[in-house]
Image (cartoon, rainbow, N blue to C red; front, side, top):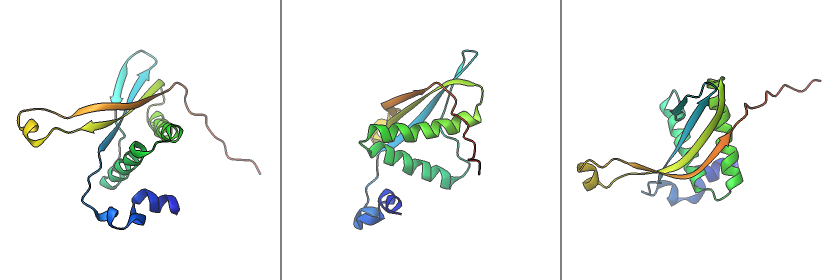
Length: 134
């Protein structure tokens, strides 16, 4: 319960409702297949609520100073992507921040840019965990 309260920010009073827009973080999966081709994808979520939850999770990951926690959480997301693509040979997860142009720069055709904060390679399919036997 404490993690939920801290993660949502409702323990901070005014900060939860403050007009602060956090930076936009992005997680991109570089999917490597056995035949040598590479594809790129972000997390596929079927609902707007799921997309909002993922954005909140990525914001929390971007704010954490604990590298091991960040790496562990990203690897959980890698394993979810691996389930969708069982014939992968490896996955590189690239986590970064999206830098949006100012309104003036956008009007002149400048697109957003992406600054990599960290990248993790996962080279083995996650082990299948069997339920304990009674």
